[in-house]
Length: 330
Image (cartoon, rainbow, N blue to C red; front, side, top):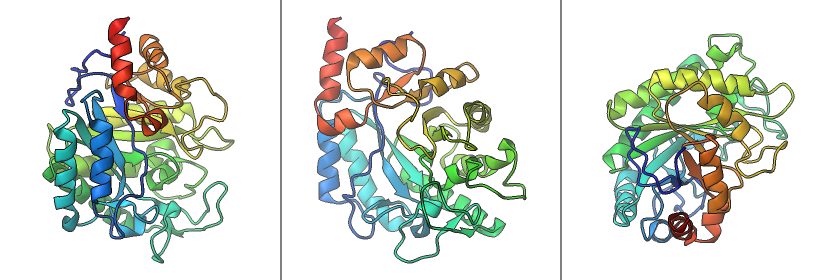
């Protein structure tokens, strides 16, 4: 099995080691979602030294209606591209690769008073907002917004794009039977609940070409009664690989970043181990990993190919460098 310092060569996205900084919202954009100096400084600090193999930028809305919160980054129009070029350059000068995560919040939106939409007119678990059910035409408009966002990411010099389908946002809302009560071709069985995902993947691939890497963050299991299951995640992962996803980034569904049934570092490893038995593309695993020893153990057990370390790097910008040095000394 891979070591923390081992390069990843079995993917379109070639990486120097196995440490990934996953997307974490900073709210450092300006009011219109543009890149700011504060954001440039933040990512420059996190990437300094070149010890991370990849930074996945915090989720960026593909359409204002899908904005999750104020001061979220936007990739919804061409005016954002110049700022994105500066951000890609800031990270690249530190010898780290960068992917842009693109997202639509659906019924989880805070969009300044625009309509709140979702797959069905049902609120998310623990929330009161009941969205307006999307029409087929509106679904296609959202698919097109993802396509254009991916094109902007590539034009700005990013190394990859990640489709966000986790943590209770729109694509996750279609995936989960808790929020998808549709009776048309987008609802019901799992193959219908991931129809929009497959349409987004195809649209993104058309925008970026065959050689540009596509990642997808899948909220594979809700860990709730009546919600999505590990079996769903295995089925979806196989379909996403066939559709052209190059790296799968596994996380939670409506449970968010936490597995309510596990606290051991890498606490989505029950899902990642099941998925990895059925697919050949690399898998990123996150969840409570705070030490290099924990990361190496997950690699050694075959739970993942890449390790996402979020909160530890958020607290300590030197974490990746310390982890690499420790791994090299063992």
